[in-house]
Amino acid sequence: MRRDDVVGELETLAFDFFYWFSRFEFALKENAFLASHAVGARASPGWDEFVKAWGAVFQLTVAAQELRALPPKRQVVAANNALQWVDEDFNGCNTELAKVVRLLKNVRNNLFHGGT
Image (cartoon, helix red, strand yellow):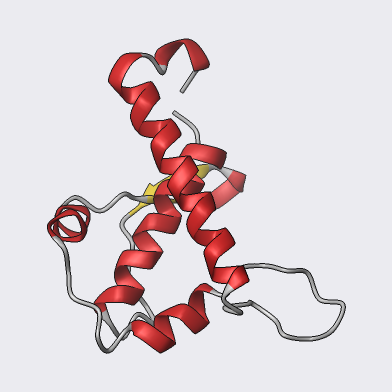
C-alpha cells in the first residue's frame, strides 16, 4: 500500500488503530505486563502475561466478534524467499483473548511491515 492510497476514512482508521494499539502497549508496560522482568532487558510489552492474566474472564465484544469473523491473514516466508499470505492457525491460543490478541498483532504487523 502506498501513502497516497491511504485517504479519507481509511487514513483516520489507520491512525486511530496505531494510536490505540501503541497506547495499549504503553499501558501493558506501565502495569508490569512485560515480555521479560530481567534487569536490563528491553522494556517490551508482555502480551503473553496479559493474556494469561485476563484470558479466563475475557468476553468477546461486538468488535472482537467482527475481527474473529474476518481474520487478517499473516505474511510468511514461502519457497525461494517468496512472501505468502496465509490464514492464522491459532496454535497455542487457548482462550478467545489469545486469539483476539494474535489477530490484533497481525493487523498491526500487516499495516506496519506488510506489503500490498
